[in-house]
Length: 155
Image (cartoon, rainbow, N blue to C red):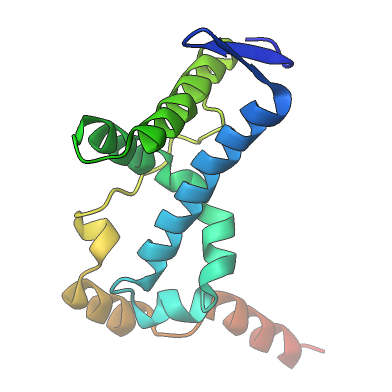
């Protein structure tokens, strides 16, 4: 795949079209990250990440695999409009071609946990959230606060 054009199903796509499909995949990942933020998260999570948009902007890469799975489901769904299928197909092909060329994800995905819908990590767990609160508190960055308060005593 050159940086200027790519041929998908006999149609040459220019750089601006390629970038459109890359942005489409990224935007869907950002939406998934926003959904994750809106699920049953702990008070500590909320203290650290009160802003859904900041969270989604920082962690969208953890949702690439989930979006690819969603795309595959939409492609298999006979009720998905053909124009949507065309867009999804192009997003996946451009991502796959880039991965093959770069030997890594289009978005330089790390190997950390990929968060998928309908899992405990995605939905959240009230019991686990209570345990986090009990063991670690509900404040954002309590260790930093403790270190700063300790350092202030020695001045």
